[in-house]
Length: 559
Image (cartoon, rainbow, N blue to C red):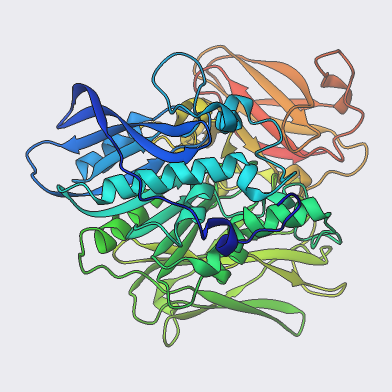
């Protein structure tokens, strides 16, 4: 069997998920409007015994029957009850299943010693590589846990329907069980396969990749895009722009491989800096209402667009679902095709009063005249709150086209918060995946003279420094305005890498009150953690502002 290339069919054809659960309920604890019970069930049989699966089963009080949701959190992360409570308040039971295994103290799934690599802390190469076959990997064991967990949930007498939600690695697991497990629908969040292409940019000369036999074994047997054609239940995909863990450029490629007969939807979160935006919860609620509660809900069919050059002016013609009532529509575009982890996406909204026949709309694509390529996608939100996005397409602009000129102005508050995102909001997230609905990250507040600025309360980041339209010339200086009601320190960091690790920092003192303060700095003013000066602003990837309290920022300019 070693070195055999297994597929979604051959890998799972002999899998036995019919063994008895021998469930064991442990403690019972009250929650707001719900009850949580720890439970162990038995999973698959290995040579040294059966997997002992641990989970938390939450049920809403006052209901005898209810639909339920299986949640697979990201590997290595705990069950986040803030997310669980959202589903409970909507009338769903929740089964939060552990597949990460032994991580420290506390109850966890127990794997027999012959599959010890299923413990996330000890995966070794078994997560990222297929040295033997796909069966001898962590993914196989994790999917086996999910197969038994969803069957247990589906067979509960109080459960009327069962769906599944998977976050990042949890989402990748759901793709592997969706063709076979008895789930009524599933939602994949920040997970769409293409893990073998992790460091390969789609929109580059090497975007297709040249792979070894080992990589082909991984792609065929484990990568989620290989499972997409076999999915039989409705699926919704959510992902975030600039997510460093999920290559969103390739997400739609998986979406397109799903059987056309299957109901499906996809949505990007554009300005969450790697987190799923709060508006996506509306999609989640409507999707589950339709397929678990069997409500009559309008869900848009996939949307698309075409781009054309009309006498040097590029136009984007979007086609939305003609059966829906459009509440908002627009396009996002970027001229940075180099790296998916650090792009500034410009938003252009449409005027729905000018909507064309059958819900079509034409947008001007006002790109920088010096750019030869651009990435574009369109989005639409319907009157019921459901939103969808199109595929991200690369538009070849050519050397001669009309467009805007190079801009020395990186940001002005006249454009709202466009151009900024919150920086590393992991402490202000739900399940390390969603933007926290109780936390305001980006906000315009009035400064001196009523002039607004964007607050640096949680740390903010702009990627415009690496956009062709905004990138600085060699030898440029950097000027910006800041204001604070009270004396405050402001830390400004230029990063030269997409992971925001190689930073060059300068600290500025913002005197409280009075007029806006202007600051001017040269590259050499910014130092690395070892004291080395930044040689040039040119070639940097992002700028981060972190202030004490509500320090406001405005008018970022190259001089």
